[in-house]
Length: 183
Image (cartoon, rainbow, N blue to C red; front, side, top):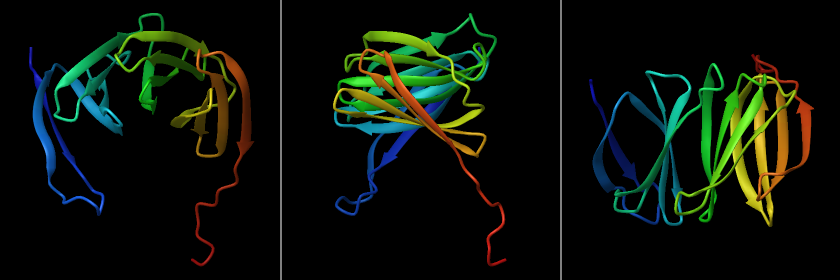
């Protein structure tokens, strides 16, 4: 089995700090592509998908020294394919993983984890939103706000409580010109 070694190389880009590596580590994960990293108040969060299986993904939590604190690998056999979107540190105590699923069509699969990596809840939501290609989430008071973009023509916002219960959603169509006006 061929191992793919991932080199994580993080730079501080703020003008307050010199631009030098924070740490450099190599992690052995088989058939894995890390495609996303987020800095949290207590470390880094990485998300990957497995190239050998489209319905598998992993989340890895690193401390500021680059040591692995915890990781979760997911395989969703109930769906024919899941397209991983993003894992978001809503705050230092709540991490959510959001994926687009094909069953239900255009649905969202959301898993929530605590700061220690323990699973808090897992839910699937059906939307009529269309092909989702952008996801961001954040927490306001006791609400989780998830921003969605779809088909490059829609914006949507979904609101959940911190237990994953649906509160409301709003969607808007956009008119985007592909040609600049002064061309």
